[in-house]
Length: 222
Length: 387
Image 1 (cartoon, rainbow over the protein chains, first blue to last red):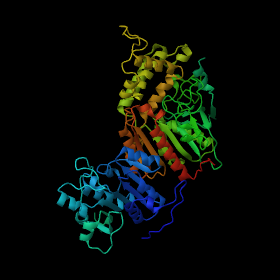
Image 2: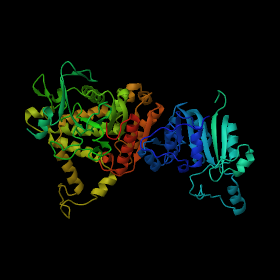
Image 3: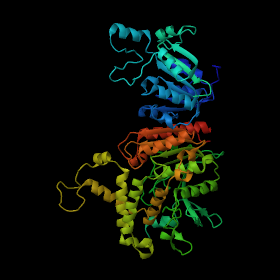
Image 4: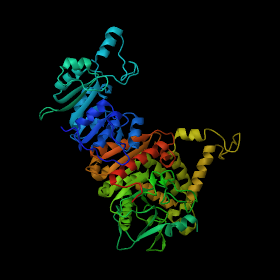
């Protein structure tokens, strides 16, 4: 997969500066082949979609919050208000080359159903999520005896939208269970930098602050 | 002759005449010919003819979208959106707005003179539909030498026309902005329209639709119809905020049926000003056209089939307090567009101003319309100067 593609000239777009973008967004956008059709589920303010459109991707988005949707639409992005748990059913099979679920899996009611839907709608799925096995999380629970809170996940247990936390290990098991092929897996550290590639899973599960996975269906059957 | 009546056959607008060689084929099976379309344009069509926007008006709107109205003297009905430097920038785009077929501001309708009798058509005018209105607009667009519209924009009945354009002529619509509308009129909306029509027809001055010849005017019936309809364009919260239970020019109830309350006085004013600028029969025909509208019915009941493979860019907008065309209706449009693979944006705007919000200064809505059109213009290769 080539990572260096010429960016499309867009009217009024600021020059591209990687420092303006989150590490996981840059990584996700590099996993997408330019020119493909992408659905970003839980697209927030549309930062990732804008990054993708800059790479010549035909991008669409779904976002739960009205504020997020309206910001996206005002930016000219093709975004609709919707819920990953209920509105993915309305999309036909194979409608997109990639379906992205960026930092949203843990906020869905039925992560397994959502994941299956992603790979029904898209040929590939890109999923990123905070790793609950990250050492800082473990330490807070083990030593502090309270539900972990980090800079990236500052909400308290009683008002968090994140109801289905998992570890990288848990996610890998789920992928096996629903017959999903992992084409690429990357763990990012606290600063959004990839951990070394040849590290064993337990190392990623302990030192990865988040995981980013490029997934596809295994074989013909689903 | 009333000022409105003058506008019927000789409007203060541009007029496209279509002779007997160019009939308008109506859904009811009648070929309407000759007929005319009254329209306004703003801005300049570029050399490539790619910067044209068609604005479709709502039930009681007309072609005077961005100029002083010839009958009421009021500013254009979409002054928040159409004008120099606005979202529909008249310095950048060539904006067309035509009076719908069946209307009463210069396009052929029941108040127009029937060439066969030399008298107003009245109820002899054939029943028209939303697709008929759009077919007539397409003939106008042909006449203007435009292959593809950069955008078709409208709210309410105008939004229905936008949807119909995108379904009937997908290759002629680059982008579509249907606002506060639906692909089919709901039972509740048909019920309200029936109430309005019955009010008109119950007025003895309606004279079975022959009021022009009899020298009468069904002002009371049409006024009541407008009052009832106007309530549906607002919301409980908006009415309460605007009027509450405040009294009109008095402190105590009169113990009569005078307009004691401000809201009563307001509604009476809405009714009486409306009848000065609108034709009662036209109101019957246009409400009927909306009632008949059902895109899915024309596609074996499957709405998604209507939009399958469309290349048009869509932006669907609804308003939280709109109970005439609630968000659920817009969501159904979005689901069908997604299923058809369309490029669609959908925004629900939070406001307590009801269905009428699309006509008002609602900054979030205006920002979204602007953002959508800007990105569509970039995709269409339109520069900011419009050339």
